[in-house]
Length: 406
Image (cartoon, rainbow, N blue to C red; front, side, top):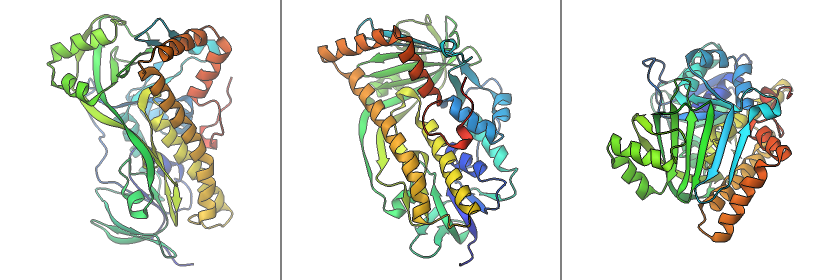
């Protein structure tokens, strides 16, 4: 067997790439992580990052098992215990309460930079993981016995396995010639942070409108993070408004559920697309996170799917390595793909179904979704199953994500 510079090279040091690096830490695999931009490690204590993630209980368990949760908790995490969902065009509504399934919370809202900083700190503690930053992948050849990577700064390195954790526009996926299925949603997601007249009550509030859902996600400073999905044209109009005009528009769009929106931070927007890699693996290669799949953010599941990818792939690799098997072999990597691809596709399809159902102006579908919300709200067993699935208590979970459900 040829000697490689590294056993595993992870391209992309975002939340998902860092999680995989931590999961492979303290093993005898030699790991490198290639990342173009240093993580943001410090910021004014009163500031709130524009981008946040809704972290499930399963993802929390992964972070806890990897030793990163304590650092996140020390920075800022915002639990939410309830969720209120309603239709803008009818009386349908459903209320989810974690107490109904014997839990103290449904999940946490956490700034992406908090997650990133905690994981970056944790990666630095592992002797077998090397962070090469700033660095970029220039070229990749996986045809030989080892993968050969041409880096922008560091010349050529070799690896037994290359992991694409480099986002929706993955260069690893492109170099490998892996095609994707998907389509644009013709929506943009506006993100910002706000203060409201009434307290958020540690509740996530989501209103479904024909142009897309509007979510108020509770933060522990009393404010909320906003994700407002709407048409690209409307998003441009909203971004062009003054702060005062935007506050009025947002208060109206939320039906004043939290009173008037009184303060707004910096606003940004990003296009929403569905994308799914036709295969998650290649010769000496695997894709995780957004490099493998992007999903509509209406249920906040995107990063959680990526974290499960990372935990599942790490489990497959460590088990294979412990048995003396080649971690870059296709039949080993196929186990990871079989484990994760079907589950990810089910979630993506479900989100597409919700988007189409709640975005339709057809009278029959308006009636159906309003009746569906109202009926769901009156069926505790169904509501409880929905909550358990959303929290990550259900399904074929990797060992890092498993815990005893009560």
